[in-house]
Length: 234
Image 1 (cartoon, rainbow, N blue to C red):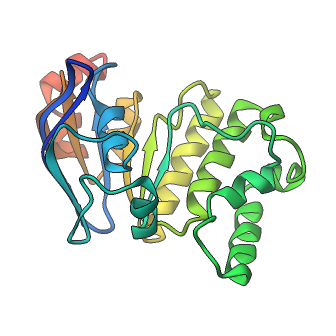
Image 2: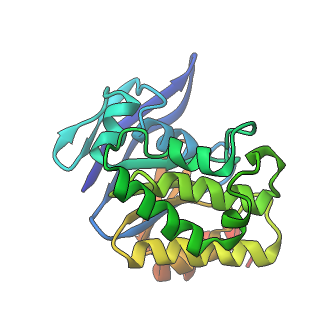
């Protein structure tokens, strides 16, 4: 479904990602784990078109998207749920969700999807006319997830979805991501909570200094001595 080959990304003269290659098959939940600065967020930004790669190739469903616009990438079915939630603070909950489907033209389907998401997240339904900036961190995360899903994506990129959330909300967030995958949407998850991420994943890549240093199933990496020592505190 998605293939990244020899990806190089730079911020000025600094290479944040170096010769990185990953693959994601349809229906998988694939995680990227690693320390801060390892290149995880940069990789997602390159896939979604927010950052232009310096070298390498990215293909999605057979189409080369290496230098495609974010709009084209969204049209193809990739949605990005960024780190820090990034909701539009002065827009209402409903308006934020509508922003997720601005490329769609099926008004009946849009309304149906919005009501389904409000049923999944009753707190958002209660606050549909409230400014997004007044929501709690957990509510904003639910809104960011909902906004991404409103585009009916084939692949969702989640960047640190549990960051800054209370423990009970962290658990709920991972449950939602698991549900999304179970319902047929492919997922790439970047997550500092390596144990939870590996438990969820079909496959995972370990990134260190912008490169893939290990790959395997979630179960294999949970049992890997280096991963245990570096990322699981064992």
